[in-house]
View 1 (cartoon, rainbow, N blue to C red):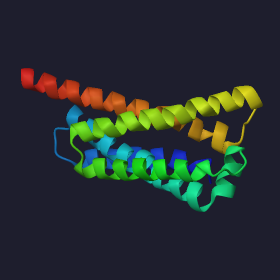
View 2: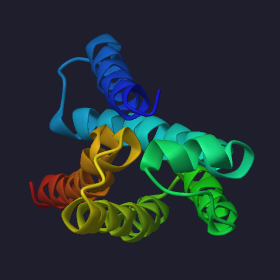
View 3: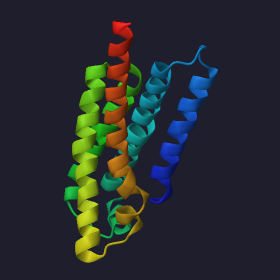
Length: 166
């Protein structure tokens, strides 16, 4: 399960964004594509993945630790609470977030997931930990998710600014 959930959340986000762009108004604008990608990445890879990680770290801590290649730890509760906050912020910002709120969610996601990704790389290098929850897709999505969010927010800002100049 740990292997597939990050991949499925990204796949679902891309499919839903594509569907809403396809069914949306014509002509299709770059701004509409960026908005739908932002919305569904915030909803699924940030929001639902955050809630999934919260549930795992708080309610299934032994199984979650084992999937990461770690021993259970009381710190998992704290990690779970951080995931809960990020997950809820992702869901809220997907549909009701201003550009500033979305940027704040992206920065927090970069700090938390990016830091977790660095931790995974260190674990792989120092201990050879290749557990699915450490070296699997979660490693890549820990970097991919915040970087794509920040990139899309920059593009959204640029295209909004460029549109005002024309």
